[in-house]
Amino acid sequence: MPKNSLKIFLLSFLLFSCGFQVIYKDQYIENSMANQLASIVIRGERNQLAQTLKNNLSDTLNPDYIKTDIKYFLELDISTSVGPTFTNVSGGSGRNKVVLTVKYILKNLKTSQQISEGSTEVFDSYDVSSNRFATYTADEFVKENLTKIVAQNIRNSIVNDLVEEIKDCKKNTGNKQYKCLVEIE
Image (cartoon, rainbow, N blue to C red; front, top):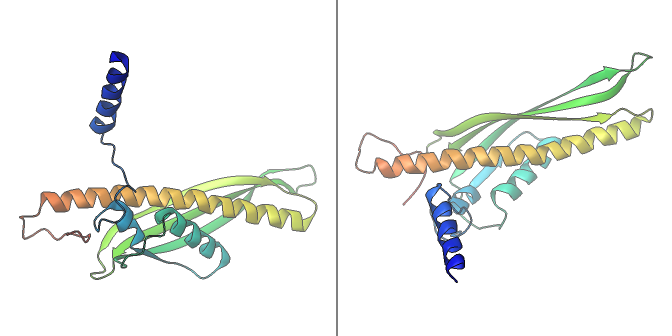
């Protein structure tokens, strides 16, 4: 019995002393992080890769499909590059490397003030086949998988920036000169 209570005490001490913060627990509270993330609308380019990234970001930012008012918009700028990683004896590429770079800006919908900006770059590679369709399919498959990683990276950066901005807003509640970039009540 004493061992169990000691384990529970140590576990609770570790969880609450390291800055651990539950993101999706209080999703129905207006100012919860889940609600803040659900209130982001995504604007981007109109192509297949951008749509795939938008869908992955929507699923990553709002996994519980919380209905909320839109407070922020996220602008995306996507660029890809494909290059050979090595060449074979005939001079053709034997393996291609795909690099996906996404620059993003998160802005307040009402004020258009920038809350967060950043970029993320991920890469992967695939074997080049003598069959063109197989190479095209491998290229598309790699790009689609990279959008999932990019979506997670962007979400993590946005969560970090929103948490910092909310802390600053709460710290400067009495300061009339400080303009809070996020909407909290």
